[in-house]
Amino acid sequence: MNRIAPTRATRWIIGILVVAFFLVPLASTLLYTVQTPDGSTTLARWAALADPSASAALRPIWIGLTNSLVLALVTVVIVLLLLAPTMILVNLRFPRLKPLFEFVALLPISIPAIVLVVGLAPIYLHIARSIGTGTWTLAFAYGITVLPFAYRSIQASIDAADLKTLAEAARSLGAGWPTVVLRVLAPNLRQGLLAASLISIAVVLGEFTIASLLNRDVFQTAMLVVSKRDPYLPAIFTLLALAFCFVLLLIVGRVGRGSRKAQP
Amino acid sequence: MTLAATSDAGAPPSAGRRRPARSWAWLGLVPFATYVLVFLALPTVLAIASGFLDEGGAFTWSNVAALGDPAVLTAFGNSAWLSALTAVAGAVIGALVCYAMLGLDPAGAVRATVDAASGVLAQFGGVMLAFAFIATMGVQGVVTVFLREGLGIDIYENGTWLYDMPGLVLPYVFFQIPLMVITFMPSLAALKPQWAEANLTLGGTRAGFWLRVGVPILAPSFLAGLLLLFANGFSSYATAAALASQGSQIVPLQIRAALTSETVLGRENLAGALALGMIAVVGVVMWLYSLIQRRAARWQA
Image (cartoon, rainbow over all chains, first blue to last red; front, side):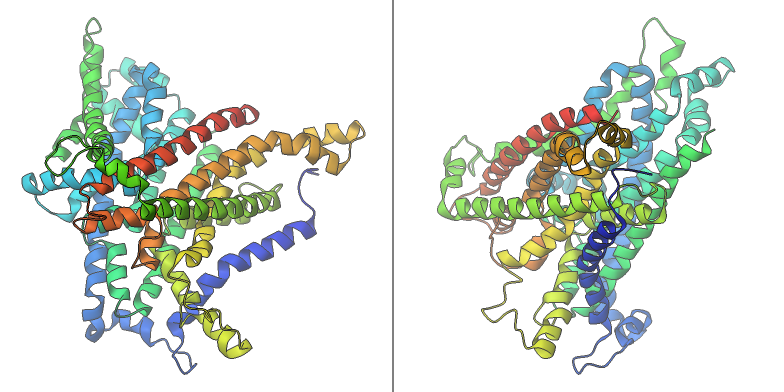
């Protein structure tokens, strides 16, 4: 028996109170989307999502959502092709740089996005002139936002796998470095890489600060625009997006736990 | 353009081992280092430096002096008490949630659900939390209408406060509690049941264990969590921006006003000075956080 665990009654009292605090706003949001002012229940607002005649009101949200998904994709590419290889390199060849690398990777936690955006504004003026004003360019900024989350996931996998031995074994069997990284190391880090990618998607879908102040149209800014005319649509998308992120994080959690069980 | 450069990042190690005498492996660090310099270091430096520059790019103290303006001071004061209040509430309730989950199977359904839900609400909520609270407590919100028509209580008798400072408290607590759960749970889970058994064997009581062992060991972690929550509240923007579409009651909203309108208080580059003030506050808090966290980590081997 665990002697520091709370009693059954304590557990239930805290649990019920806290769950109530968190469920009331979420359940209210759900009720809000299905109630008419006269008190009856309707599913019309949810049905309108699939209704072509209501698509004009939804257009900004679909555009924003598409932009956000493209951004999520580019951000994941940055994480997998820029961050992950650099982390492998640092761990294999420059172990003395590990503390510095960790410091840099966790730094964005301490620099608020609202501060970053003040300095990003002039940089994005230059980017607009040289590459264009495409929304996807925002992914460079998002790569920084997701850095601490992605770093932690990938580093946990690196710590669990013995990169050095794996790399040396593959090298001594004649594998070139590209083969080592892609066919030996990456599969051993797949849990960390998957978790980093999923968390990155969740961060990008929820990002508002940078996009809004740099005047880009993403999912969150579109919801704010639409909410001025129709308060119900953002409520519906809020529930859908929160549920989607919840499922993403459930998978991340399962992947993280699975890695410990899978390895004998 | 940059994508082409980044996809090379995996290849440079290949240059390393073949010429052990003179390694070129460090070249592999260049793409990431460049990226971090351009999109993390440069914006931070620009944000702070612009606070010291006037419209023509010459050095000036004028923007920094604007930090002493009553409106700006009020915003910093508002941000400070909002962050402090929600950090304390979030830390205490979050710690209680962690305590309630103590002894549950870490791989079980409850822990998995709480972990995922905490992550979503603490890190990805932002604007969506504002919408949830408008649907709940807005003028036509479900709870507002229920209280008004069901119980005859008008929560907005003295004006609609949801879109002002007091309205930020509940949504902030809503994302502070989950952040505390994420931060504090590892420390609490590291408490060894053997310590409690040793305490009981030596004739101690349950209350005595918490008073003399549990609380002293957990105090640094709790304090670290409190500081992290304060910094989190101080720097959060999205929820406030969506709720308070007008006015600049807190510092992040002042930065919005400074960025979106040409001049605030008749000064250019005020956003830079505000960013500097914010970095100073959050920087000190996060520095303390890392100091305490290092001490707290001692018990989490």
